[in-house]
Length: 206
Ligand SMILES: [Zn+2]
Image (tube, rainbow, N blue to C red):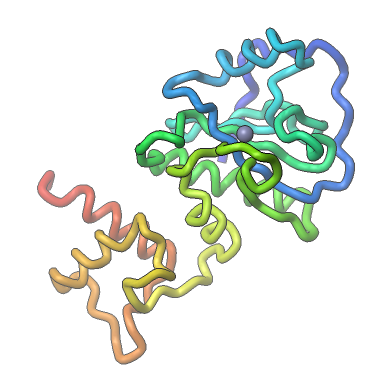
């Protein structure tokens, strides 16, 4: 995982270090295309000292450090005790998060958790303030479950426990004999799911 600096980052005043971090809070931009420099300029124009988020993730999987482990400006009442991660895009609209962005989101959350340790809650902005952010189409539960379970989760059935993004591909793999399973079920881990989704998406282009 590579974390980039924001090119020519604007920091107007020295930032205060975070206190004990209780939460990782995920946001969308509520804008279809705005990139990290555009979002930074919005925040600077609103009088913030720097981009409000601690980290920011683009559609292409690029991760940027905004305020890093200093206090942020993203979630009322939590800015000095949480890490805010911004995601490019408007997930209030029907759209699928690109795999690269999803995976980078999982990576940066794990990175923050490894760095800080302890009991850290992961949630969307809407879990902390009265807002729709990060939007109803943001894959919040899928991202949380991948972060928490790492590679340990085993999926035996195509049911509610299996992430929704994988179900169609797994069904296709079962139908075509690519996955057989045994008396206990399919025995697939997260890596298997990702590979099957990859296979499913590339079928027909071989
Ligand atoms: Zn938000």
